[in-house]
Amino acid sequence: MSKIADQIVRFRESVEPQATLVAVSKTKPNSDLQEAYDAGQRHLGENKIQEMTEKWETLPKDIHWHMIGHTQRNKVKYMAPYVHLIHSVDSPRLAKEVNKQAKKNDRVIDCLLQMHIAEEESKYGFDKAELSEFLKSDAFKSLDNIQIKGLMGMATFTDDKNQVRKEFKTLKALFEEIKTGDVLADRHDFTELSMGMTGDYEIALEEGSTMVRIGSAIFGSRD
Ligand SMILES: *Cc1c(COP(=O)(O)O)cnc(C)c1O
Image: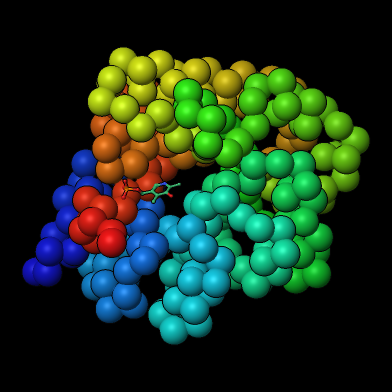
């Protein structure tokens, strides 16, 4: 078995059935993605729309493509026909654009709302107050072509495991609050909590992750 196939099997064994493994293939060549596919992997994650679209055009059509990176609104149209789940909806304006492009394609696009949970300033996402305001707004309620499937967050890049755990706990608590509350209409199947990458997925699973996004541990480090 190839090294990539090996890692796919190993990770699937350690995260399923609690969580879905999203293999993050950004910057990697199609041949690497095909190896993952041949090992049975169907969920792949990318962070650039153009790169993802080129890969989608070439690779098998039953791959579920996950957009995990910060997205420019003017490029949403390229992925709208095929994207499986957008993890990184980080503003009301982006949600509105995804809705518009979904409508043009006569489909409903599944989205996660990205929350800002890390200490670093640079990470994108809603804070709790912004999220609450957005979900209660009339503008949100008119977005019939997106389904909010859950939340996504990235912890601070640090060796301090307690810090990472604390941030994941905060995200999980918010997730439960929305899931059990009545702010979202019933048509939203709010079930997914995307948290955990190569460096912190074990903590994320302990804290209730349902989707881990693993790149370098599967495909090797990126240049
Ligand atoms: C690149 C990336 C990952 C995967 O990172 P690894 O540390 O290589 O596992 C996960 N999530 C997001 C949002 C990313 O951009």
